[in-house]
Amino acid sequence: MKIHFCGAIQTVTGSQFIVSVNGASILLDCGMFQGRRQETYDRNKNFPFDPSSLSSLILSHAHMDHSGNIPNLVNKGFTKSIYATQPTVDLCKIMLKDSAYLQQKDVEWVNKIRTRKGEPPVEPLYTMEEVNASLDRFVGIDYDKMFTIGPGVNATLRDAGHILGSASILLEIEEQGSKKRLGYTGDIGRPNMPIMHDPNQLRDLDILIMECTYGNRLHTPYSDVEDHLARLIIDTAKSGGKVIIPSFAVGRTQLIVYILHKLFNENRIPDMPVFVDSPMARHATEVFRSYVEELDRETERVFLRDNEDPFGFKRLKYVETVEESKSLNRLAYPHIIISASGMAEGGRILHHLRNSVGNHRTLVLFVGYAARDTLARKIMDGEKKIRIFGEEYKVKCKIEIIDAFSAHADRHELLRYVDTNRPEKLKDIFLVHGEPDQLEPFRNALRSKGYPNVKIPSLGDAYTL
Image (tube, rainbow, N blue to C red; front, top):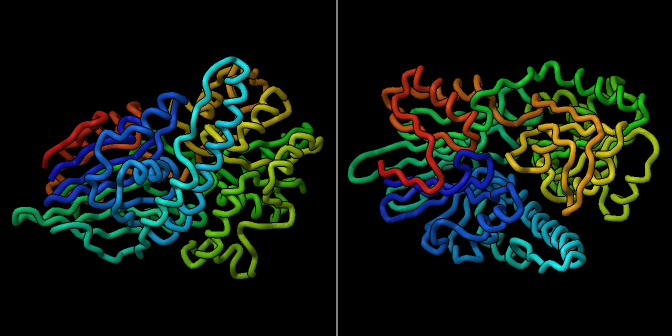
């Protein structure tokens, strides 16, 4: 058996791992790399392997850093099945189409500026036609149902508790008379969070590929987050400003809407309009509504028992058209805008930031992780001048970060996840989907707990086990 590490290596985007065993090559995730524009384009267009040689793809969940490069994979020759939970299949139908649409629109905008500068035009990473071709390959699989993925290889998807449909992947492998259990965590959710179930942890493993987004950080307790959010909204409203929340359209947006709904019901924030300015978020929310049986007991207790929609209330409007989106920039009274993408690398959030970062009354509230070199990370790190669509803007607005909304397990939660596996059995751990300052301390923590063989792969590394 060989594991080839092709993405999300010492970074948090572009997840791609190949398990080769018994003549089969199984790709785990096919995420989009996000970073500097040219590097993003080059890395996503060019795979470090031959897509036509793959036997199958198993997808952990629908977020773009795990699913977003599937159309390129199919366009480059992948012809086999893509296995995922049915909610992930439904979400990918929305997200990949939206990705192609947003790329086309962003490219049109950028090319106008490039034309003025006498520079050649650029092309989108993929088209709507390529997305549609890839969607034909998806196969929906239930949680906890074993299926055969190759000779001597069975797979099972466990609820990862990260977003709707998210899965950890268990591969049970028989090779040359030896049996091994290989686990890929995908993105690990957090216990005791609204909407999602607690993670169903992978146990009794021999090999673990583990995400470490927050391998050296502790989240603020969720018990404090509602009061913190309410104070920020109240203060911004008193100043006559608006709150802009860059948010992932799937998972994070639904959580923020859920909490705002709860705060309004409890009269803890002012009566002000809330706009979700992301067609993808609106469509994704419809998928969430169609899987209410997948949501946790708190959602049932707080909303569903009284037949309330957790993701809709009277002050909330889902913005659909471009004209409606543009009109938000003319509003002169306090309001809240939630818009994609969370890393501010594309979509309508760029236009809201472009029009508002120079206003000292505006609050830009970050509620999720942002990778290195993304616009969101630059603003979070305090850069006073940023570039949007190739033009420079001064940052004068207020900046706040609330990490308690994170759908990623923190250091303590990650360690507890591994603790369900005995060191004498779990011989190999590979740490992925994390930046170096998170990976190294987490490796040290695992070694101190008795796990002897903890590796941090470099991009392109292949390990034979």
